[in-house]
Image (cartoon, rainbow, N blue to C red; front, side, top):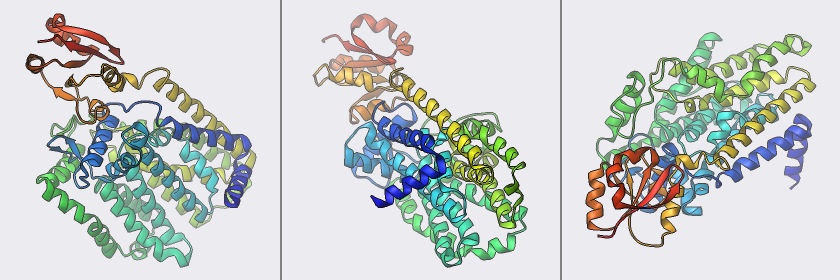
Length: 486
C-alpha cells in the first residue's frame, strides 16, 4: 500500500492530476471492455478458437486451425497464454483477451524500467505508450503481435543498457538481450530478429560504434543460446506435423514478404498492399503522439536546457529513432503488410518523445501529455461505443446468431456456409459445421433437420432453397433458418 501511494504521488507530480486520472480511467476502461464485445472475424475469431482448441485438447505443441489441419503460420506463444486464460476463466472473450492485456502491461513495465535507467521520465513513457492508438487497441485483441513485442522490447532495452547502463548490471542485460531473442522465436519466428538487428546495425554505423557493439555482447554464444532455448519446440512441431519447418521458414518468412499477393498462404490470403504503405500505417498507429512529437522537437530549440546534448544523449536519440522506425524500414519493400506490424516500434518512439518532453518547460510537457491523453481517451471511447452500442463488433462475429440458435433449446446441428467463419467454432465449442457449397447443405438437410446460419450477403446463393427453410430470425450479419422436417 505504501509503494502504491508513493508511485501514485510521483505520477501525479510528473503528469498532473487531470492527466493521471484520465490515464487511469482509460486503462481501467480498456480492461473492463475486454468482456463486452464478441470476438471478431477473421483474426480474433481464428486465434481465439485455436487457443480454445489448445486448451480443450491439451495439445501444447501444435496450434490447430481446424480439425485435422495444423496451423503452421505462427509459433505458439500467444496461443499458449490465451489458452491458459481459457483454463482459468473458461471459454469467453475475457479469457482469451486478458492475457494479451497482461502482455501489454508487461511491455509498459519494461519501458518504465528502461526509461528510469536511462534518465528519462518514466511516467511520460507510460502515458505515451499506453495511449498510442495501436497499442491500446492491441492490448485487448487476440493476436500474436503483443507476444512479439515483449521479446523485441526486452532485447532492445537490454542492448542499450548492456552498453550504456550501470556497470554492475551490464552482464545481466547482455543475457536478457538473448532471452528476448528467444521469446521472439516463440512468438513469431526469426522475423523478430530482423526488427532488432536492423536498428542495432544502423545505430552502430551512424554513431561509429561498430567495434563497441561487437565487443559489448557475446554474440555467437548468446545467439546460440537463444536458438537452443527455442529449438526443442521447433523440432517437436516438425515431428508432430511433418512439413511445418518448410512452410514456416520458406513460405511465411520469405515468399510472404517478397511475393505481392502471395498465393501459398494455407490459411487465407496474403495482405497485398502498395509497397511503402507501412509508413502511412505508422502515422495512424502512433496517433495522437505523432502529432505532438514534431511540435515538441521544434519547441526544444527555444529552451535553454535543450543545448545540453551530450554524446550519450545524442546516441540514445539515434538509437530510439532507429529502433522505432525499424518495422517501417524492414517492411517498406514488402508487398504484404498490416498496420499491426508497427507495434514493435512504438515503445522506442514513446521513449523518444518522453526524452524530448523532458527537455522543454514542465508546463509545456504537462499540457502536451494532457492533450494527448484526452485525444486518445475520446478516440478509445468512440471505438468502444461503436463496437458495443453501435454493434460494429456484432457485424463481424457469429456470437449473436449462435445465441439465437442456442435459444431454440434443441440438439439439431448448426451449419455455416463457408466464408472464413472462425467465431462460430469458438462460440459453439467447436460443434458448428462448416460447408462450402449449397449442395452440401441439401445433403445434410436430407438426413436430418438442421439450423442454417448464413450471412445476409450470401442469401442469393440459397435463393432457390428459401421456400424449404423456416426463418428463425436475424442476428448481426447473419440470418438463421431451420430446414423443414423430413
